Amino acid sequence: QVQLVESGGGLVQPGGSLRLSCAATGSSFKINAMGWYRQAPGKQRELVATITSSDSTNYADSVKGRFTISRDNAKNTVYLQMNSLKPEDTAVYYCNKYIINWRFLSNNSWGQGTQVTVSS
Image (cartoon, rainbow, N blue to C red; front, side, top):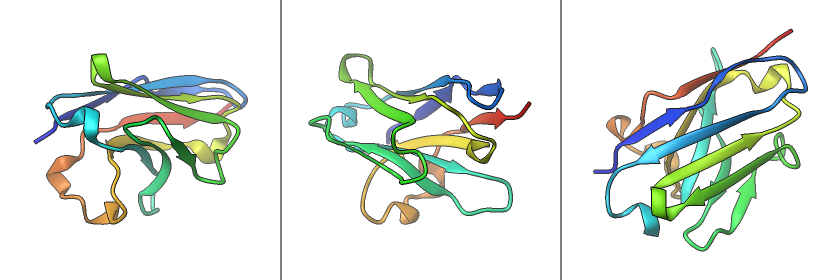
């Protein structure tokens, strides 16, 4: 079972930047596609960005051009660089492996998340 620890969140003004990190334990990290997800208050968790084991990336339309996902397999870490942040980016951000049916990932596979608040 891979354990995930997210960090790097905080309070930032609109237009600002943050870099989130997700440290993973477990030997399967390198072969897994990974994703960043977020959940805003009162809303369902949504997929933000994905990266495959070969570094192919994909983004939700709402963040395309502003967010960049990357990974360092030597450090078992996935990153999310977030630029030009908007108030609607406010949410708790999580990382997890990415599968097509990611909504069915077990509850105990998720980390604690990291809060991102975009506000003036």
